[in-house]
Amino acid sequence: MRSKSRLNLRASSLKANGLGGSASVIGSQSIDKYAPIGTVLANLEGKQMRTISKRTQYGLKAVIALGQRYGEGPVLIATLAKDEQIPLKFLEGILLDLKSRGLLNSKKGKGGGYQLSRPPSTVTIGSIIRMMEGPLAPLPCASETAFRPCEECQDVEHCSTRIIMREVRDAIAEVLDKTTLADLIRRAEAARQERKSREPLMYYI
Image 1 (cartoon, rainbow, N blue to C red):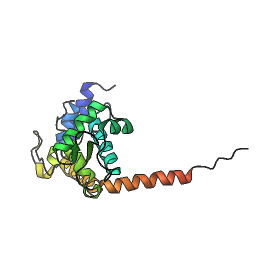
Image 2 (image 1 turned 90 degrees about the horizontal axis):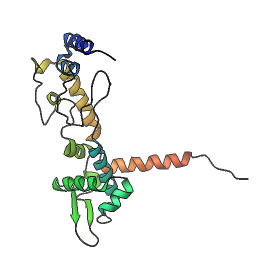
Image 3 (image 1 turned 180 degrees about the vertical axis):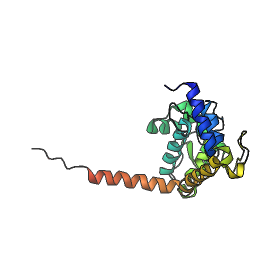
């Protein structure tokens, strides 16, 4: 295991090579709490990267399932929870949040439940993730909607870290903002059909 001094030494080396802002933070293990696309897990010892939260994963699963049922009427929370293997109480909070943001409608009583408020073809994956996680950028200084310079940055316009993180942000947005729920549902179904077509034939004697 690397000692703390070795971590700080490596951070200093990265800083000298123009990666000062984020390297110093990671090297000292004092990671910024800004986490627009998930919980920040990056550290030099574990070599873990940030990921979207479990809550967002569950939210995506639920919204995709509702997209598959679009036009069939409301779906019970209990049905969604069972079919998608999502803890019921956790799912209730997620759906209430998405309803408050206008993505879902709900109906009480018999035949009640949740449904999409608009067609799956008009809902992008990027918009769902932003609703649940915030900006897509890995760092606040690279964000389009929630820009904030790093505290230790002395030249935000020419910062090497910001330049590459902007490219990362743009690449993420390019995929997520051009993929709708309808697109994703079609691709998943095509993948399932392709897998079935490749399954070996079974012969029984």
